[in-house]
Amino acid sequence: MNTEALSEFFKSSEILLWSAGIFVFNVSITVIEAAYDRATGKSRRWRDSGANVIIFFMSQLLERLALGAIAFLGLLPFYFYLSPYEIPMTATSWIAALLAADLTYYWMHRTEHKTRILWANHSVHHSSEDYNLTVAMRLCIIEGGIEWIFLIPMVLTGFNPFQAVMALLLIAQYQSWIHTEHIGRLGWLDEWFNTPSVHRVHHGSNRRYLDRNYGGVLMIWDKLFGTFQREEERVVYGLTRNIETNNPVTINYIEYRHIWQELKKCRNPRERLHLLFGPLS
Image 1 (cartoon, rainbow, N blue to C red):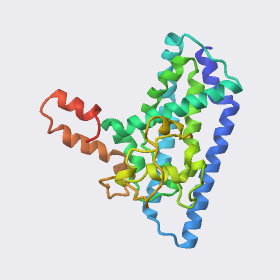
Image 2: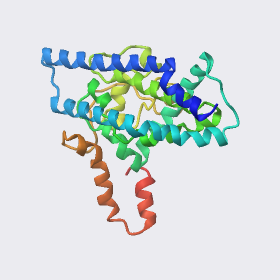
Image 3: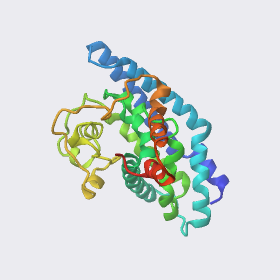
């Protein structure tokens, strides 16, 4: 399969219609939840929600202009020159791709929580002290230009870049609806799938909730790798050190500012590398 054929998938594949439908659904329930909270007087930081929406439009614009192309072009050399196989796109391979993307998402997500420079991006999503559907929109505007790197193993396995990117996108889109307090615990579903209860734990700054429940759709990865945690106490949302701002630009770069301030205190290149790529302190 050549580059032109792969590019054409991004214009005409039926999976794009599924993704567009999920996008419209996610935006719709976000608007409905906001209207319901306003009508019922639910406690909510409305400026925080507004910042989330602005960040969403900023990231969508950047994604359309550059980041999607970066991901696609970055994966092409691995697909054409290093992958020994080519998996055809069938119903069965889409199921396999979604499972592979879900496992990829788990390790990508876990790495973002453990590596300082990647946490600078991902902390944007965790910095809200509220928990509602607009929080799903609060994603670092440059994160998409980096996360494609984690798809390299999928491409080397034989999935083409279009299928790998779309599978990971669908895993991410699934998670929009779980950013809500309006849905309580769901029994056995909380044991095996990423649900509002499971993901509330992930957003908690409570000590027992830190670095738990990384899964995208399935919780089997967290159970296999020892990071699963049930919702057992009231969740305190936000960071262990909150940022106290609703400025969308500041929300996106504040952790980089913290890193820069610490880099200036480092005594040698080794300390700088450890700060950037080592674990969070």
